[in-house]
Image (cartoon, rainbow, N blue to C red; front, side, top):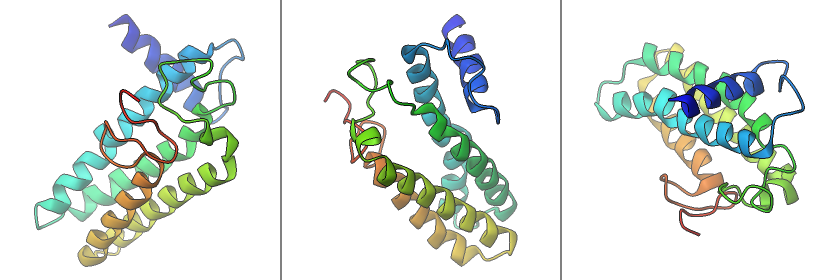
Length: 163
């Protein structure tokens, strides 16, 4: 429980609009917060969007709300990838060196995910269920552009589990 509380406190500090509360955060703590925040993308936002879209009769109010929350979260998430938090420093991370060596590509991929998620929210607010379904596919594709798919998968910016 203490690990979870500590990770949530660090994630809150790092994801706050002002950024990290102090420069004394260790790379290991930043990676832990990053891993927790990445997990939250699915658990807190995208899982319920996927479920309602798969239901055949999407709750567009839920999609809009969760997508807006995801956009806010994603805009802050990039702060959890500062230089010095790669596998060379924190072996437990699955973030590949390309996050930092190809930073413009990583930032572009994050922007594409944010934009796709925002489009989904906008279409849900307009009541366009068919577009929302297509938007979900685009959002999932943008998400997979970094890490390749499900939890164990690897991709351009993430090592596969066990790799």
